[in-house]
Amino acid sequence: MDTGRKEFILIVEDEKKISDIVRAYLDKEGFRIRVAENGSAALRLLKENPDLIILDLMLPDMAGEELCSLIRESSEVPIIMLTAKSGEEDRVRGLGIGADDYVVKPFSPKELVARVKAHLRRAGKTKKTHLSYNKGRLTVNLDRHEVVLGGKSLQLTLTEFRILTSLAENNGRILSRNQIVNIVQGFDFEGYDRTIDAHVKNLRHKVEKDSKSPEFIQTVYGVGYKFIGIPDEE
Ligand code: CA
Image (cartoon, rainbow, N blue to C red; front, side, top):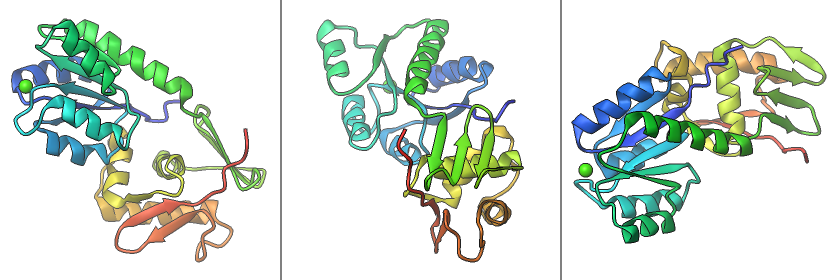
């Protein structure tokens, strides 16, 4: 079953001609794409948890290398550097500050797509597909799209499933309504941030023993939601 988990690729590139080409090729593969035209926009979009970043080295407001180091302070997201610099020294430096790969302009968009897929595959291997909390009381199987509470399989809508998994994957971290909308948008989610509240309400009725005093999905007033669960040992 398609769970609507389209991978989210962030393209950081100030040259529209190039970002348009990259976007077009990745679009054909069904990825969800956002373009940041400078470093500060990229840092804002980083909060939406991209699955991979394509990073141009020459940006108007900061060097790509600097941005790469900043991203690495908080994220292990795969980074492919895209650059006109082709010297061996630049290459080694790029990889040294945390980039995972290096593609030199002019490049073949097909090759770039192949590398994107390879890095996502590699990253996916370490990504958990089975989540289990509170001594097995709540388990989520991301491949099978299955949520089990106290031994009983729950019937969740796709939107509810995506909201639950995005919160659970960020266990203990607050996600804003806006962040949740962006994650859920992968499958044509029609709605705005307040619509999330209605979905969370429905989700709580299914996941929580007492939806008025939730065990797993906590409201963070004025901000959004967070999932609280004690992860079980593998
Ligand atoms: Ca540039």
